[in-house]
Image 1 (cartoon, one colour):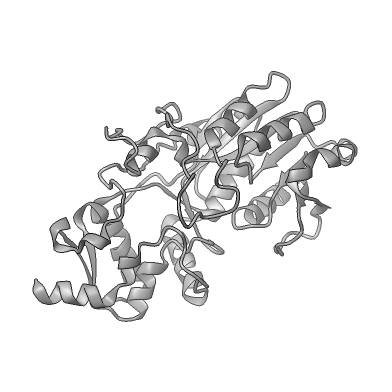
Image 2: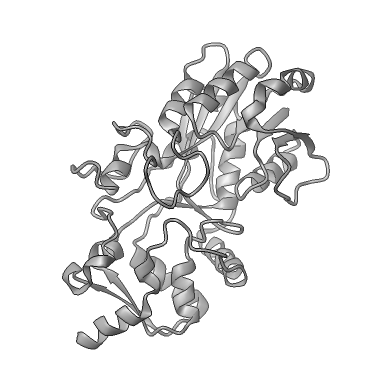
Amino acid sequence: MKILIIGGTNFIGPPVVRQLCAMGHEVTVFNRGQTHADLPSQVNYIKGDRNNLKEFKLEFERLAPQIVLDTILYTEADAKTLMDTFRGIAQRIVAVSSMDVYRAYDVLWKRENEIVPTPLTEDSPLRQHFYPFRNMPNQPFDRMEDYEKILAERVVMADPTLLGTIIRLPMVYGIDDFLHRFYVYLKRMADRRPVILLEESVAQWCGSYGYVENVARAIALAVTNERAINRIYHVAETQAISQLEYIHQIGKIVGWQGNAIALNKDSFPAEWESGLNFKQHWVVDSSRIRQELNYEEIIPVDEALEKTIAWQLSNHPNERSFWEVPYLLDYATEDKILSEL
């Protein structure tokens, strides 16, 4: 099968490419060529910017991919250009989306008040308000003003001649994670902090995660399986544990002798307020992709966490990730709170 991947060299992309090549497919990567990735030697390349996608239509016609996988589809405009470019060329579009499409995301960010029951299914209510990152400081990546996966999904799934598949991803961790999701905990453990303090709702908060190699496996199955036509899938680990449990697991792996303690909100200074409603869990049900595409993790969760920690200990972030809560590394204030207990 001929498969064209838009993106393909950042974090999730390379393991997807490797999975598809190992399955025997002919893979071509279309991107700007600005990010080096260790991809199989048989991978083909087309250098170009997705903002100018239509300019490459003749080249795409010559390539004649059966499936186009878009790993960097962020906006409605991008989706329209994608469909217009490949209509009449490809048989199907597979688009990588996100769990942020759900109403529960707006509850988490205090844009809505009513808690949404979890786990979420692919049919759970979507956000009623578009463009979730507009006016947000410290935006995680470019072009966030027009970021809207809901609208992009609608375009991909609405075309009667160019079929679609949507993969909604959880919080993805692993080697080359540019968000360094577990760094704030590992940094404290490396600094031999005796205690990690968490507000009670943060400590008990649960979200769905997925290890990058396992997520790549799920995407590869959706790309290559015709049963995925016109379907939307979650990818996530079957068990969602609390942040407190994650700290305990990470601490056990690195041999940390400290303890994580959950305290009442009133124990913390007002400036430590995160702005999130952690009573809203962010957990999804991934049974559909497991039942329909026979997906299962290729890397056990325990091993995945160990691999991630080993990588993170050797790869410190150059700057704070947008999601990192400053108080998690505010040792002076934490010591003051501990002294007053």
